[in-house]
Length: 147
Image 1 (cartoon, one colour):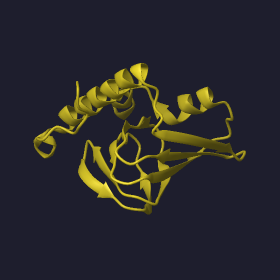
Image 2 (image 1 turned 135 degrees about the vertical axis):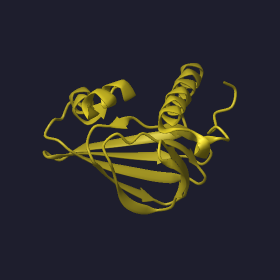
Image 3 (image 1 turned 45 degrees about the horizontal axis):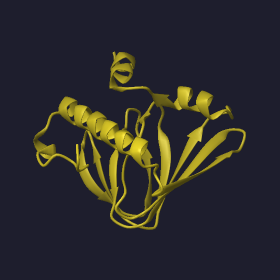
Image 4 (image 1 turned 30 degrees about the horizontal axis):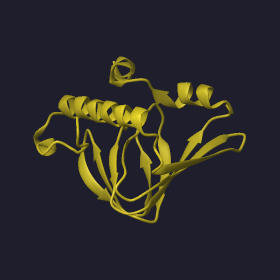
């Protein structure tokens, strides 16, 4: 894949097709990162005892795909606009605060420089342990949990 972009027929795709496309977009981005490290993002992390906070600084024109959330997540987007595609559709996210539901996975393309902060309730402090608790590995694991 030479160009990383949302398929033109996104709005006509089924949820399953969108999930497959999100996975393919993620694989394409990871493949690019193996040839050139991502210099277009910077991550800050904090642990407060009951909360794990991630602040991601995203440069304009950056494409990225997030993980699949296993918990509800509070988000704050400060500064900048970002194009977002999920299994539910496409939107332009402006600076705001909102909650991501369980199972959310996003493709994003930064229209402007953005700062995206997420708040995850957990008492764990090791990042690997936190990821095990708050993320699904793939959509198959999510589907198993939904059934």
